[in-house]
Length: 296
Image (tube, rainbow, N blue to C red; front, side):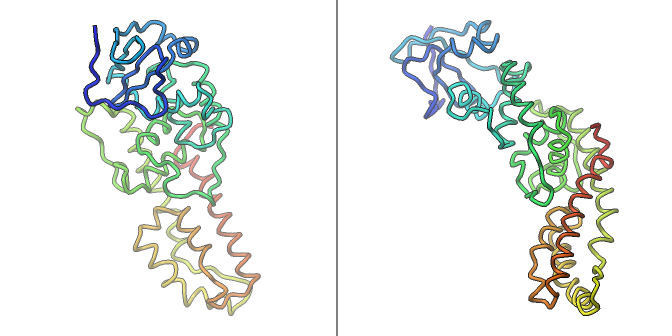
């Protein structure tokens, strides 16, 4: 039977006129080579599809069931890997590795070799706390997935930290449980993330509050006085304004970025304190293992 795509949009890259299968995911359609996919996934061996005569070449048509939760952006990452446009072997972007891990899993399109590779690459991702930036995980759904599915404790910590600090996260500050009727979110997973976010937030505020609200001492009395005179206006008040007590990695990075020399600190004290603040970031990052009770 002939298939009508309605308002579905052809992918600008992965639409080959000589393709043998049209894959319809969300509002995106891809026309690719079935033999390439079926070599790596039983899903495309077992899925019969229907006849499609809408293109110049006859092709089968597979509409991906919404219940599988497959995302078009993830399929694009999958195809970029198998067509060698952006292979995963050297990929370091967590967002793309997350898409690859999810779409290749047994509950979605089931590409075992790609799933193993994506999991391995995620385990190799090194997260340096002093370079952590808000938006490291740009997608709340990616972070939710990684919080339970990723083997790397470092990446899982980053996902929980994302939920605790992201302004778009439904778990931000006062985590909430999503509507149980919402089929796109696993309730038990959401509950686990909410509980751990609350736990992390409590422990982090308990630890970081005295660090934030206490002007540091230095080896030189004059430099100590500079901190005492400026700490409120340069550090404490900005942290109060943007909830910095619950975002210690970013807050410490902002403190390091202040031009302390222009405020009167000597060069040796500036260097010493910036090193101490970097060590503080690492200490907080390491302590999250205990605070979150994440197994190593």
